[in-house]
Amino acid sequence: MAAAGLVGAGAAGQRPAHSASGLLVENVTRLYPVRVAKVVAPASVQDVVQALQHWPGPVAIGGARYSMGGQIGVEGGLHIDMRAMNALVWLDAKARTVRVQAGMCWRDLQDHLDPHDLAVRTMQSYANFTVGGSVSVNVHGRYVGHGPIGASVRALQIVLASGEVREACRQQHPDLFRAALGGYGGLGVVTEVELDLDANTPMERSVVHAALDDYPGFFAAKVRRNPQAVMHNADLLPPLFDRATAVTWSSTDKPVTVPERLVPRGQGYGLDKTVIWAMTELPGGHQLQHKVVRPALLRGQPVVWRNREASLDAASLEPASRAQSTYVLQEYFAPVAQFAAFTRGLARVLQQHGAQVLNISVRHAPPDPDAVMAWAREEVFSWVLYYKQGTSPEAQAAVGRWTRALIDLALSHGGTYYLPYQRHATPAQFAAAYPQADRFRAAKAVWDPQGRMTNMLWKQYL
Ligand SMILES: Cc1cc2nc3c(=O)[nH]c(=O)nc-3n(C[C@H](O)[C@H](O)[C@H](O)COP(=O)(O)OP(=O)(O)OC[C@H]3O[C@@H](n4cnc5c(N)ncnc54)[C@H](O)[C@@H]3O)c2cc1C
Image (cartoon, rainbow, N blue to C red; front, side, top):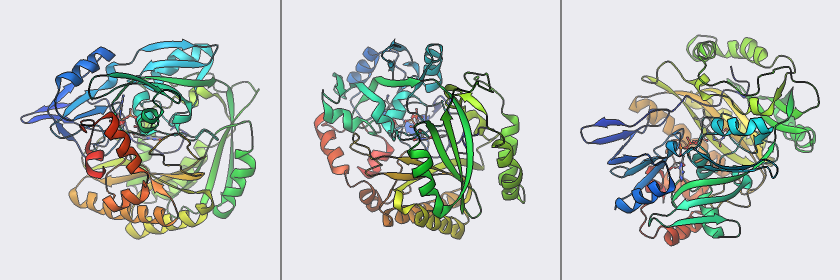
């Protein structure tokens, strides 16, 4: 089982299903499928230009489809499936920079980088996501001090709804660049992404257990100010979420103890899936997690290549079926000073509502100077919830109730919530959580004046 923590759910290789009244575009959770009118899978920027020029109506874009609330589709619209645009444009190993087509997934990019001892600077905990989808969500990972991916993005090539191709960076069309980072496809189709890279170093793992009130001090002194610390997260476990297990990967000169340089594709993960099933289905699942699973996962001080730890496969989390229940993520952000108070409130809401949360992964981000729709408007901790829910309308409604309670909690602590997940927020909660949305609307009015670039997220909230 992936030692990154139980923070995700399943592979998303689905192709749209044909149906009598259109095509169904699904995401990883199988919740919120979107019925679209047409699907195209471009292989080049010219294909994207043509698709946009030949389609008069609304347009939504899909990458690897791990967002969870219809962010990749719009009812009756055109769906642009970016996964065939997965070529390397160029790699400058000496300058540690790379340019790729936006439909490339991280795992494919790692195949290009690893022979040069290079690594992606900032990405999620798993390697299945597309580069364009990651930029458009402005994702983050466990990298100490990095914050969202935007800081490592040098330039974007964007095709506007009109079919015009624009190069955007901090010097050229900076307003388009900043709105497209975390823009959820609302500005245009990102066709190429240029990124800064890092060295692929060996990293050694260390584990420290801390009381909630002590964790921020521990993090500031031993992680944030430690130049060797590369990746870090803290796990909070059910049922009480009252103690942080802090896991840090630090660069080291020691020889690797795990020689594998990248996680191979296509593994079965039978044991991992059985363990997750047992923790959520069997009586005493919490005890199993506390007494057996976690100690086994965190035993020893392995030394691994950074690329190996960054190439984990979300297939390890895919349940046998998502028909009756599904595994889902949510994420909240709050200023660092609110860590213990927010965590206690979070635990209280989850317990009150009987939410079946397997794990909460805490991360940190400095303020984001780039994205218009930034989720880190000051230094924040983030809480990533990995949970199981039923797929019935009643189960979805129940999740909606506790999600809205958690959004209120985050807002009351000066925080916000993450947008790639289910759309349970009220419009008023969205407005309070993203007060900068008017600046995004203004950028959209300039670059997409007819409002064609959209999806179910932007239709609901923008
Ligand atoms: C198991 C799992 C683990 C996760 N871990 C993390 C994590 O560690 N950190 C984190 O921040 N998030 C995490 N997420 C959330 C995930 O990062 C986002 O959903 C991200 O968007 C996934 O990339 P994707 O290629 O699947 O994008 P998609 O879901 O396909 O698309 C996301 C959004 O980007 C837009 N988009 C996609 N491609 C383009 C393009 N080329 N041009 C313009 N717009 C585009 C889409 O329209 C959509 O609005 C996780 C999700 C799962 C399921």
